[in-house]
Length: 78
Image (tube, rainbow, N blue to C red; front, top):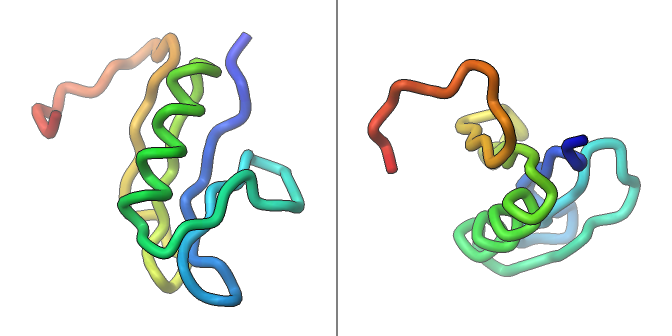
């Protein structure tokens, strides 16, 4: 069973946050998006879930799967 997807979103008070899907509170808060992405990746790898990266306006800009993806991507980004 996969864990909750981890969302990297802007924090209302500045900086960035990592929140599990459906959670009210942030798991982590960082000054930079890159730091938040690294934390979210570690959690997602541990939980076999996805990282969903949002831009400053809250729109999804990227996703990375660390679970048992039935349709693995064919991109060569990483």
